[in-house]
Length: 378
Image (tube, rainbow, N blue to C red; front, side, top):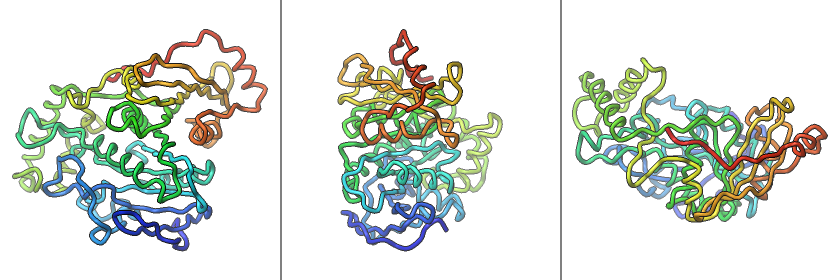
């Protein structure tokens, strides 16, 4: 087990929660499986996240198991999060970490987040959210009474609101929240920083090295995916009837069958009037509040193992302003560059430059700065 002795409880408005010291990082307390919304089952399936009940009606079991109890258990514990905080934390910066789906639910990801809290002295929060059909099935063109998909993104927005509300209870400062992640998690972090509902909660955004382009479906594309999913699902005798009553295992089987030809699930973000997606750069430029964005890029052609981090100030309908740049040597354990510069930006808003002659020479040689361009969604 990765956890040792229990630590004093933390009082939340929903009820007290119990933490434990991490075995590998004993200077860190871990609070696992905390619900930030009601379980998305029954009539709450294919619906926006609903308020969380009090703690006498939920259990933090979701953070300690890895889906071993089947699809129904996984669905019921989707809207939970884990918190790692230094033992003596008070008014520490907060990092909301959104991992990609391949890593978000395994022990390696939890150890990684605990390590971030230990190394950088910050409060780290890792929310889970609905994925696949349960998170992004858009049936607006096919059936009445269902939302327009994007439930997974709404979950992440609700989780960020929960973090801003409860950060101080875990020793965090809700005015210094940074959002970041890997893969699709990095895309979600950018959306949280730019969308009007959540932008005021975000002080900083980190977009790591190697983040792939964001994928956004048009409503027509999402309708075709939804129709194909219903065809597969209704071919299963156990899956006929109201979609909110269908067994979770049947939904998982239909997802697997639909994703098998392409090698990945076809569900994803859908562009709608209430959640417009386009160019991420434009979204951040038009954010209602100012946000500092740290963008990483490799310098392989100029120096092996070096990462260039550039800080841009975006939002409030102003052109992006380059604030600072640092070139650092990437830690061997992290090809994305989650080292000292990353931690310094989360803590202070400025990446720490490397005390490295090669990095210093590279930084001095860089000329002809390009404007911020995060790429168009597609």
